[in-house]
Length: 254
Image: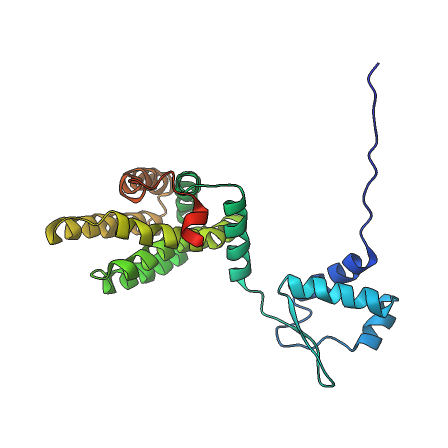
């Protein structure tokens, strides 16, 4: 006879409930960046809670970078702009804590970027192609500066996910951006291309491949865009991961 145990369900603390209600107002746009929250007395009355509980709720929101709290007579809580950098930093910390490697991150990107290219072609070809083309021109402008080029190439990959029409993939792209940027910078330092001719050939390969992706997306050719980007990620990975696949994320972020 099997035994079925019901574990006790944790009930949220009152401060967490209050923080959740205020957080929802911020994320739904009812409270805009720069808005000041009502006074403590007003918030205590509205949520029927004590001052210590309210202050704990505000500390939760402050920790989540949703508000700032100024002290003093003219102080109070003010709504912040939701900053994607908070997500980027949290992702970096979690990857470090889980002992993730650059190979892990690249493998994940190689799995999600090609389908994102297909989505972009099938759902928003004109907008996605325009955004990617603008980024490609920024890459061209810094073609002779390897560090700057690494930054712009990383941005191209982030924009691909942002422009695919899927919010969750856009968030993934933003969360990984700092790691990708540091990875590409490290690859340029660790694996310098011998000779100007070979470097120019490598740059032309990247630009030409990106041009092809943009053309396929613009044409609405989803399957072709996906297949092309599978090949691109495989070929590019041979350089980006050369001698770096086993490098821990913690080693490039700290």
